[in-house]
Length: 341
Ligand code: PHE
Image (cartoon, rainbow, N blue to C red; front, side, top):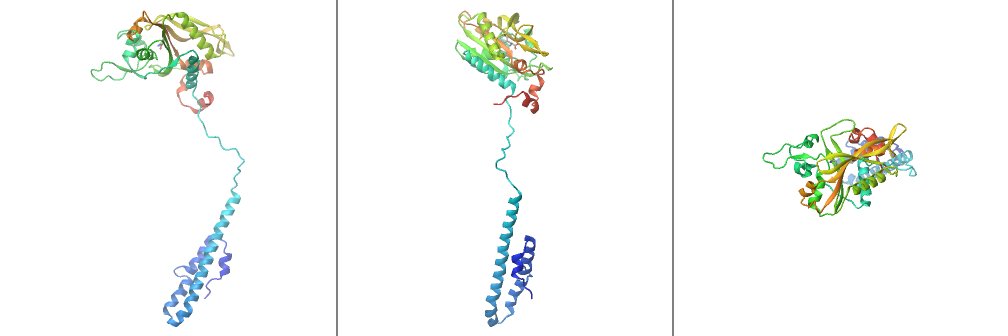
């Protein structure tokens, strides 16, 4: 019988054909297997003569198939490497990176500007109680200012001494700082604040930065100089003009609303000059009752405070005209207005 020509194995050029040959020879009903089976019906003498030959044939075929298999696999790999070229000189893909949100950027700028003026950064909880958010700031229970703040309250557990709320401004950080630090105090407190309010210029969550100075002999002059120095540094212009308008906040006396002058450039308001005025922050001399509520003697310690919308500052400096996209998380907006680290 035709077993299989060794040359057929050596010249076989596909793994499929090689497998076919393997089945035909060494498989269960293959020709070599059949040959091995003939040993059973041989006499001892025949077997002694034929056995080694049959086994040698089997070994030879098996070795040839194995060798050819490796050769075919190597050839397949070579062929793949030849077509799949990899250009090591191409620049690597830059991984998609995020950007720094304008609010974070402005917070960093504020911290840096005020650090130069000797201010530290203070923080407080966004979930506050009504004592820190209102009462200690001279806004008692029935005060109309409470209603004006559109406060988000948490459902109060029975018998709770203090109502919990989302802080409506960063001013409670004034209280926490005065309770925890000995004067002189110079801090800013940037962070999230919340009011039930929503349109193009108001979002229920927004950002403020609080400023507080408590020391001896502090006057309105210190307040004005500090705000002027801050706004000049922030808007990177020397022609910043401020206007202090008398106003009312329960926790400052006297109180002033601060406007910054702007000029029109290409239909946009640009900070600097004084063709028109824009309100940028609230401020005043810390009310003696607030100082006393924090356990300090108002005869000994005076100070000023201010509160300013951070999102608003970002819009004025970087030219956005809608506040809502700040918090939509749209990557296109973030790529456009974001900062690289
Ligand atoms: N907390 C005030 C507000 O949110 C701003 C302010 C802060 C005014 C400090 C005076 C002093 O409107």
